[in-house]
Length: 86
Image (cartoon, rainbow, N blue to C red; front, side):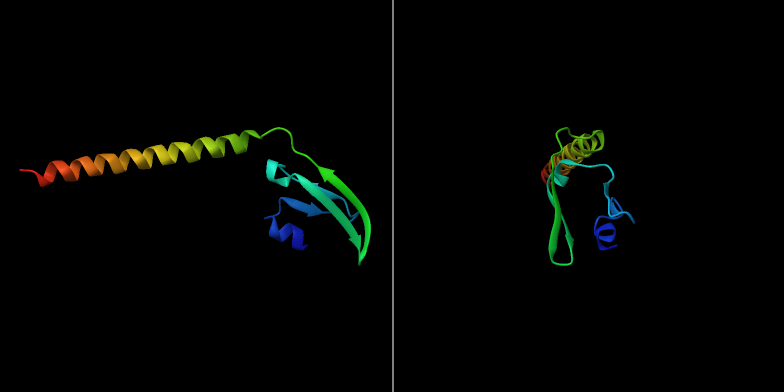
């Protein structure tokens, strides 16, 4: 239950103790271990090899937002400079 809450429902462990990762991303790469109390039961290494379309869109959107913000700052700066000289 904690795993599901921490991941916003993206990572779940079902009643059969199977790990499910919806929309796996690069940052999910790692070693996953299963414990029964304090005893190690199993370990698996997960490697994500291809970036998802959603991750690419997120990066594009971030760059676009930075570019727009930079443009607005430049326009406001020019506007202030132009307005301060009669």
